[in-house]
Length: 415
Image 1 (cartoon, rainbow, N blue to C red):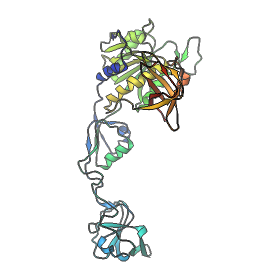
Image 2 (image 1 turned 30 degrees about the horizontal axis):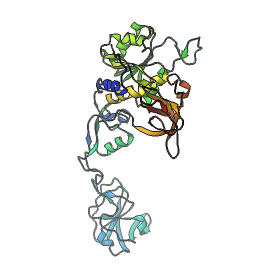
Image 3 (image 1 turned 180 degrees about the horizontal axis):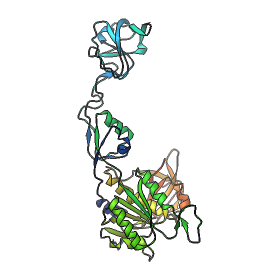
């Protein structure tokens, strides 16, 4: 493991990590019955429409398919020779003065060139059958008809590589005739937890011990990013034991996340365990919280992200570095979360010389306002306040004070 002597800019560290990402191998999955595997996956190849949308000229209304010339002198009475429901393949021949009842989405008969809404007619009914209908309005050719290909023409692009398969996009591709899709699934991620002071939540605590919550935090942040943690491992604070786990997890996963043990101290086992990894770098990043980072590619194959142990520091590190790399592994076109502008509802001290990433809550009104969810001078360990956070304010390194009414850049996590 190499060590950077000078603190790195946030973007420099993130760019280096992104350059080490290897995308997940694409796979082809059948659309029929493939919702579980496809939803949330990312397209690995552009997709074009296999046929026009709509497939046929079809009715936009429940009503009557007519020849527009026959209703030019409306009101007129027409003979009803049948009914075309949605899904019907019947193409009736219409003579002068004839029409058919038609349902929304049903193919337009070849001899018809317009549809009269049922609301614009008066039908003479014998039992369940409509024999004649009075059309009360004139309709021009093409009225209430959806033309074949007016949405998408055959061969027209439908979706592009790097786009996520949402419910709407997946249904659109199925409608456009896609039978299989080439996608990148979610990366397989392991969470490795170390720390002699950590105990299972709910167990009695002795002096110096704290509940272990980072496994919940990491698994939750992964889930909120659309990825389920494949493995969660707790490991004793022993360098060789940690190296053994890294070798196992690194060979069977795409990424390994850990929290704690990355500082310069004698008991920081994660940093020491990673010292033998040539493509992993220990750095200090110009951010607060989350300055110490150890990350890179393990010899076993997976990317490793050894994050600080304080929960807020770990969460900030995940957002700034881990999430973009995981999205890059999956082939997303956009790997960074979009930012918004908000107005500071209160003032707080910034972190001179470092980017301050402070958890905030939002106030809704005429403009989006934000206020710190934690004390600005004790961000990294303020777990209680962090629980209410809805996003992060990103305060540039050159700013020492945020004043009420100042506009700040924010990453918004929840509504």
